[in-house]
Length: 416
Image 1 (cartoon, rainbow, N blue to C red):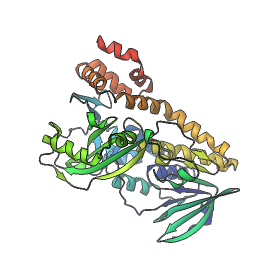
Image 2 (tube, rainbow, N blue to C red):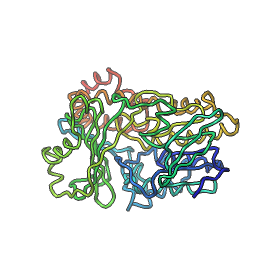
Image 3 (cartoon, rainbow, N blue to C red):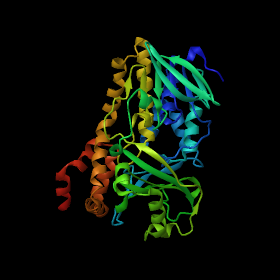
Image 4 (tube, rainbow, N blue to C red):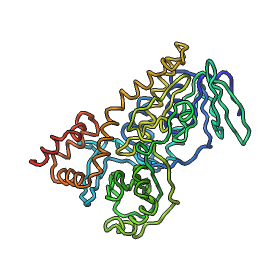
């Protein structure tokens, strides 16, 4: 399908959660745009597959019915009601995402294979205002006086188009992030991750709690087990890239060794069947502020390096950035202003909404470098119901989360 000239003022590159969110909210505002994607849906994406309550909130702000569709299809979206933290000394702390659940309450989160969730989102971009092109990859960018010249490639055939605004949501290897934003890999703010799928893992949580298992040799990082629909599990590991390099870690080998030899974990995998190969990807972390817009462009999702440095959550930040990008794009069209100065309101609004939490997550990531401290906090919380309630509340309150970065918090723990 060829490009349409009447849809070219705004081009979105990449139809993952960031790009689809931008498209959905542009269409909701009646704004014509083109969405290009190098793959053809349904397509897979290497990920932990967890969808937090923030994802559901973004979907609700688009359309409540869209959010409700996840709860209605548990064959693809496994309800998740909490998280289990496992400290290096194997102390377990189970934290619900909500203090009290009623039988009729919908789960605040889900775990779903990205091949299913991304396809779900892509289907939601279908609109008279969105011209979608699959198998169309952005392969080059040239700055013009009043816009950008975009080179795209389809079936090895290249073509060029001009646009007033590029919303780049094309992942951690984004050409726009490198060429326009000057964003390069910084191993101090980048993680390596690997993921595979298993069936038959024992003792998956009956209410879909995800498990973050903090082992000494993964710090800062963790091993995870996330329950999927139909009794399957997403199993993986992530670790800060500079530590991988410094310690010469083979993350794949380390994960396999964990599954085979860890005293507790190996028992759970005795009858498990590997259902996929172990695949790796890079995680550009949001642990430092970057300039993520400029003349005629906005960076979203992994292209903007927005992944939570402690939890590794990337889908929610991506969708938040896509929504804000659509809002700023609407203003740019109304003002006919696509300058760096005008579009910088995107940076300001995104960081105003997310930076406090991201900064705190970065501090928590640093704290995991000291396993004894993590053991201490998890051990205290496991024995203290009031502290457990406080941690549950912290999932909704950044102000409460600040306590974890206050030295007095740990002193008070000593006397609880």
